[in-house]
Image (cartoon, helix red, strand yellow):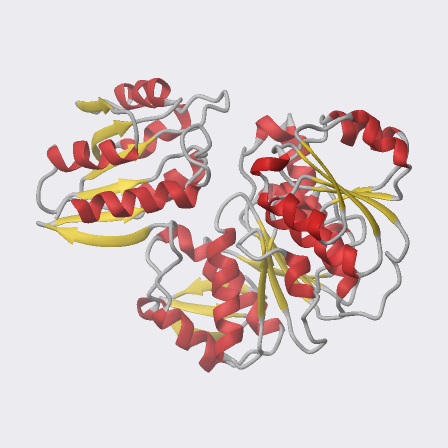
Length: 450
């Protein structure tokens, strides 16, 4: 940890707990900040709040009273999921109190360089790939951010010679006035989280924040096939490294004649790569770009690409039962993710889909349903999803109460050689706390079929 007194004696409000809020509060308390923690969940049901109060931290639970700002805070550290329309957040900004997310705090804690990865889809896979490549290369990397462990929790233990591989959401990137990743990866841009951001313009702006503080000593990894990513990268002063799944580049990562290249160097034959699905090629090219610019040897890259088959809940193979292959893609929380999952299969698919209704229709999914022989829908969007299935001409469409019943219904209408795929195209919060919980229920339900 840096020997910093930046937060010593500062009045800081931590708004919202969960992983990031709890980590930020713990770190800031240890650095001598004067803290107030505010969380919506009632104190009696709030183990995190109880733990912080036991440390001597002032905790206010059960709501977000605007009067809390009367304590004249120097900074507000906001849980990423709390929108900027929240009255406390809006009032803090009106009073010119800086509102940041926990990633910004993490940046002050260490001199270790950050590799930041964001995008509408593929963040977790790319983050994990980079981490695994650096681990095999004996670079002693650390894994942080939206993928699991809060960034400040990781940063406080980081040595200067380590790299912190960090998955970043658009929510997190809205509160990073100084956070500067040594390497910033922006995979793609698609309409997502518009219920939070309000407009696509605001969403795109948030994603672009990953580039905004970089200097000529840093690197921006840019998807050359995505117009909006290319436009955002123009605001970066960093050295730009491009990747493309569709064309041969003079410099950067691309595919030619069945081989993956970086600049003019052949890295690996495509047939040797273990990670399934055409949609994963973006993730692979981005990860290779990061590895090459940070001097990772080809042997480590090849080792990982030959063995890495993906992450849990992202097109995860579960098992085969009587010729039916089951895949868990619970992390597909938007239409693009489900489009890419469906594109990975040529055999007949029984699709399990539905979840939180964010106000959108599913017309964009229709062209990708041509290989779907049956559609099992659930959750708030069941009716909308069924409508898309009808438009696509799917004969068998069934509506069920939940994922567990969806597995049984899918198996009942399946045949040998079919793929049974959970790829909801929706967030899980209407029925499940997280997409992980939803995916685990799918996996357990598959095992129960035995």
